[in-house]
Length: 346
Image 1 (cartoon, rainbow, N blue to C red):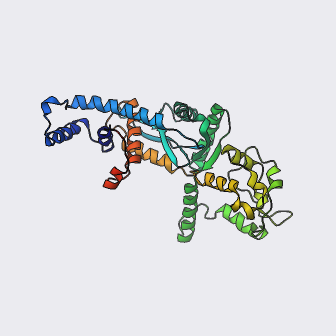
Image 2: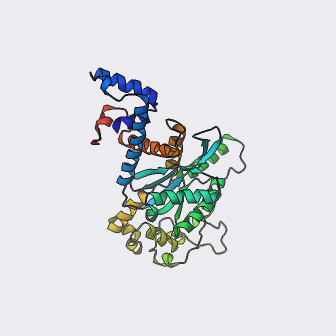
Image 3: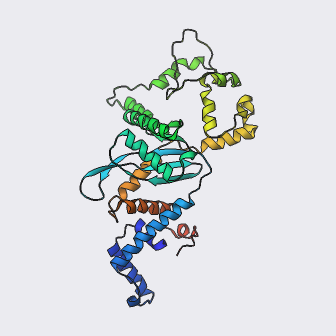
């Protein structure tokens, strides 16, 4: 299986593999007449190994942490023919793991098809109960599409999920706006409104004062809260704002989704660093991947191997699983990397 995986990752065709294997066998003084080294035999063997490796990868994938969904659609050439098709790389992340579930071809690019494809992938990998959140690009068009598709997904799953706008894309938008403002480039709106709002109310925020959050955590939050903090720059009754002004009972929902204890919230924030509950909560949230880079890597993998080595849809899915697993085990073409993993496979 190691040889088959290496040939797939390096994009070696069946014909070229025949020359490589025959040359290797000859160098090792094997009698080629007694070996099944021909294009057809090699092809059949590689097809079988892909399926076998994919099954092993799926069976071995066990998680004990909460997962976040990542997905990013792309129009690519069909495996057969010249037409273009919609494909949807679907990945999950949680703890220290990331996993590509598949890159299904969509019959349409509509939101219902997207939601169904994500749900089917989760069911296929038995991960539906592990998912608590989802990540997406936050450009205006992607945000609207993601919201609608994910609403349908939540309906299929029978529960609400936590939405994470990609933090890298947020910073890209901020950096782009700042660069445009500094360099004088054309821009429809150089001001960053959320920064302007914070600037206008900054003097009213008690930056050195922390309140115990009991009262705030009991305040009923909005059923569908806005994606960003809302600040009124000209309040009718200006007051000194504290941490509690930015918290509602919705924060409890976030902790509940990830199975985090709320005990530390009822203590003075000055003491949090000494509490085991806070340490566990901090570890949990630091490991959440609130970026959609993983979906973009799935897109890159899909594009790199699209219509390569196989024209069969099932074999294409197997192929991507084999390559992803091989890349994880051997990230670099160095002796140290190749010797770092003992597989027990021949």
